[in-house]
Length: 435
Image (cartoon, rainbow, N blue to C red; front, side, top):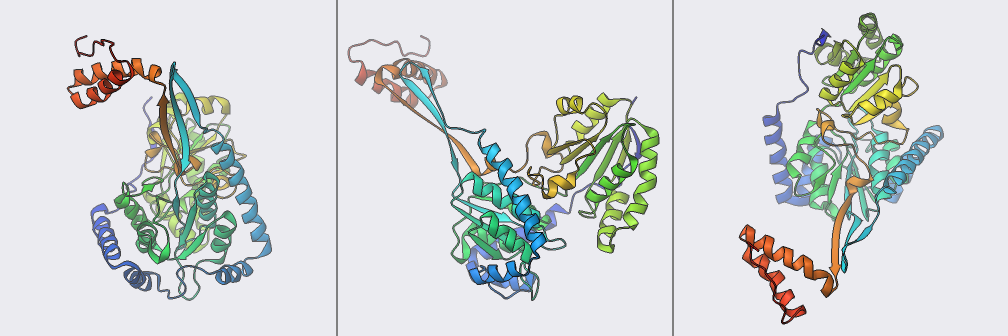
């Protein structure tokens, strides 16, 4: 059976890339040339904010005082979970030292980058969780300096809960600046900040394009598009929960794809019946986003069996992948392409987005076919080193000289030759390419 689309997307989650690219590139060039003053001009224009760009201790304390105590405890709970998981991840990377041949030792070191720039969205939604996810992992990785950057609101500044989260998670500086100008300020080291070695965190299409343009000059977590989610469900799934989970992810934005893949027609039809009512029941701004995403980008796909469902999911390589089906261990072992996996109805993408501990900065637009999400590893450089005794270098030097000559790289060969001549005088080595 081929895949049957009970609902097919009419649009794909792509913006007018060329127009966005030119706009972003122009802003980046202006700010790099003009420095702090130009960045401030853009902040006044786009953020409509003229308060402190780098928050002072008093600013942070004032913001913290505005955060309800229950929300503070929730932020601290989520921070603790993300920190615990990040520490476990860091434990999977260790320094290595191995004797390749007698007398020749090679090693690996994991070194955190010096300065991290963490972008925290604060426009349509105040992404408290993004501050927790990005700053905490950078802190656990061991970055010496962490800047958290979030767009301020006119007359208000950065959302107090974002300020509180960034502060308790370990940000060294919190910057009230949004969009391309915020990304530029971290990259170029404006306002006395160290130049960022890596930029992380979600953002709108302008932030994503700024990171794309700057990649290579700095590291980035990933090139991100609109968030996307896929649910794999069989006859054992609860249609109301499936529909609710789809709607919960569609509210991210008008162009956020959600997909249902199932082998049960009755379930698919029930979910499609339920979704419009669940969307209508949301607050207006959430409902507008979810309605557009469901209308234009959502798909419902009917497959013949679970193997075809899994293959379909791997083809989509979703950012978020939920399984509400029987035999969860089979799915865990079979599925290969996803940013983060949620097994069973007892967990949901919303948990991972906010408080489970796994990171919510994840690959979108099919990138999960070749990369994972943000983790402590993204902030760390895995570098290698070597040292040798003179005897240990002997066989390595002989092989290097012959391979180099076969490649036509005589200079490389001679770097080996001079060591053999110095360490083993009088020994006649056959170092010609043809042996």
